[in-house]
Length: 285
Ligand code: PDD
Image (cartoon, rainbow, N blue to C red):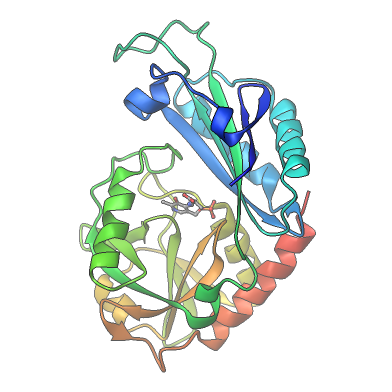
């Protein structure tokens, strides 16, 4: 690979980009991130991602590395240097490098900012056509899942468990209810065509795609209920899907070994995906 990546104000070949071993992102997972999707060489819903980045930093009293405008300019420069039509732009801010101490370092410590692009198909992603299978896993993550931190080991463990079970991903369970997917928000569609997804709280990430999809569904006249649902309800659902910046709306066709309907992406999910793609194209910047 010969990408140009961004690290603390510099654009460098990826092999030359370096971060200190004392960086608190490395030592304490003291960092936050965003993934904006690249479509037609531009960014999808990027302002919403930058707004959430600002909120994550604020919740953790983390000093921004620079202004939001400078971050956006760096994103655009990175896109220029890595021309790719479809993929993702990953952005991470950490509290910076300081001698190891649980307490936050002096506020004058400079935050670190890194960014890189990843090319991959978005519209024609193979998973979108065939749909995904998910298993259930206990949600062992911390209680501030609304903050998009880089502490993703629990999510990795759940994804590994899914892979070991021959599934694509896992939906996580807490107190007998589905919270969300390992890296996506989770939805079911009931026999009465009601879209059900967990309400916003500290228990889940407030997905940028979730917000748009729920608004678009309502505009379409579809019924939406923001409430908890059980694994059993999920297995008995008419359709199911997940949303994230990387997957947009993607059908879930098998849950805990049980196929939903005919095991193919259902009509409502397919429609929602199309509607979101139209919206995503309009949001490009
Ligand atoms: N994941 N829930 C979790 C736990 C997530 O990690 C994500 C995003 C989402 C969906 O949020 P959004 O629609 O804003 O992407 C929900 C990103 C894509 C990732 O970690 O790669």
